[in-house]
Structure formats: structure tokens, C-alpha cells
Length: 379
Image (cartoon, rainbow, N blue to C red):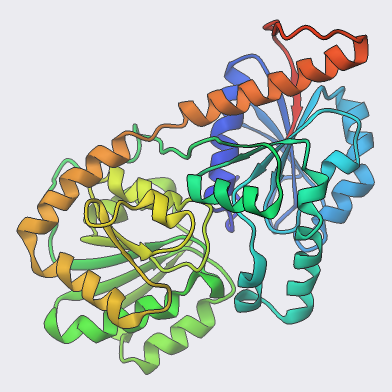
């Protein structure tokens, strides 16, 4: 069962974890519970346990981490940081590898009330100290630079990918009509109001234009009201949470995929869309500036600039020949991204952390890595 609020970070963790299992690791993942979920289930060989609520899950981890590690005989911990950090190097003597897609910083004030924003920012301020000697993995060069500038000491790139067996152009490559598609979480910091206003701005030039928004989140009611006020009711669909198969269908039918976020670690939907032959218009912010090749696989525009977004959308929709060239480049770029490299980098980081810890415990200074099976990872 998939958490309906899962996004790119959760996809990344799952794709890496299932490959770790195939490579001989035992992976046990602890995540917060959600309505209708099973408290425990096997997902692709990964044992997923769901406990606690999403807003205070960090406290659940802090209170129970040591008991979990003892019960499951954990060798190494993969600390997947998303929103409130866990600061696990301070809480366990076990070796830790951290996956940090991006920091939120002041973006939080665009998303949530100031008490919650300050709460998360307070913990983010502790992260450089907590993870200074920990191997940190992130998904893009711009995110890596940001983390190093914040004071993290050892940051490597575990590049994002896509399931290319699933995300590929439809058998019928012809695209009918004009469709703009957004896929992802529907949160205020994602800036979907910019997309709606930009689409409304170009509707007169493209009477057959349709707007589709796939995903769930707490900003849906506000955006539905905005769409209504802009006169978009008849040609805008809020599709809610969709399956992976439905996502592929939507990507294949769209002329352009959009991402108007203020902050991303990478922008997984950019690569998924490109792998399906669809160009992307996105904001020129960390993460997205790496996943979109401006002028080749799509366009990058300033955050919050409705006119620039509208102009970029219009360039793709109005020129089929140029859009065709962009689709070819998008396919090549999307096809270059698989999950194998992310898995390999993560596996090597986990093994290095584990063997480094073993050497310290035995007093050995050897740099020789011994390949073994059955390492137990707590994610």
C-alpha cells in the first residue's frame, strides 16, 4: 500500500531499498502511519512498519530507535530526512548514512503557519552539526552545493532515476488536443496558483486547452476556488491521487508537464515526463535547474512569474515542430536516468560506513572492504 502523500523522496527510497534487498541486504523501513494503512507489510522485499503520526513521527523515532535497532539486530542506519530531520548520528552509536534531498529553509513560511515553520527551521539549524561527519547523499549538484554551503562536511550525489520499463512513450505517439499536466503533491510551496494563472492567461490563444492536476494535498480546496474564480471550471480537472499506470497515461497524453515549486531536491516528475516524451516547464530553482535542461528538454522560468510561465507554455503549444525536437531531446535525457546508479552509490556508502565502524571497533586501520551478504539496514 502506497502512502497517498508519497512524493519523489519516497519513490527514491523505495527504488533503492528494493535493489538493496536483491543485493543481499535485509531492509526494514519505519514510516509514519496513515489512514487505512497496514501496520506492517512486505513491499517488494522491504519490511515496512508504520507507527505514529506524520506531524510527530520524529519524536516516535527518537523514543524507539534504540529498541528497534536491538530487536532487528541492525548493522547500519539509512537516515532518510524529509521535512523534520531525525538527527540520528546524535542518537545511535550505529553507523549512519543520511539521505537529504533538500532543506526547506524559509520556504516553510510559504507552506505553513509560522509556529510550525519555526519548529522545522530550529531542527534544520542543528543538521550541519549533527551530520558533519556523516556521509550525506543528495540527488542533484545544486542540492549538493547548498548542503556544503550550509556546513555539511561529506556530501555525495546519489542521482535520481526513473523506471524506464514503465515510463516510456505511448504506443500511439500522436498527441491530440492541448493538455498541460501537473503531477505531485499539492502543497502551497509548490506554487500551483502560478500554473493556474498562466494557463488561464493563454486559454484565449488555445481554445482546446485542458489543465490536469494529479495528486493530493491540503492546498486542493484553495486551488479549486482559484480555478473557479479564473473561469477554469470547464477545462480544469483535479484528478486526486493516481496510480503509476495512470501517471504514465497522463504523461503520454500531455503536451507539456509543469512544476512551479519554490524548492525541490531534484524534480522526479521532470525525468518521468521526459522519459514519456513530454517536455517540462519548471521554475529555475535548486533541483529543478538540474532535472530540466533549459531550451532542450523544456524551459526554466523564474519562480512566481506568471507571464514567463505563460510565455514558455505558449512556445511549446504553438510550435509543433519545435516541440517535436524538444520531445526527442527529452526522451534521450529521460532515458539516461535509471535507479541503478542511486542504488550503487547508496550501497557503497552503507558498506563503507559499516566496515568503517567495524574497523574502529577492532582497532584496524585497514582500508580493504570485505563484501558480505545479509547486512541489516534500518531505513
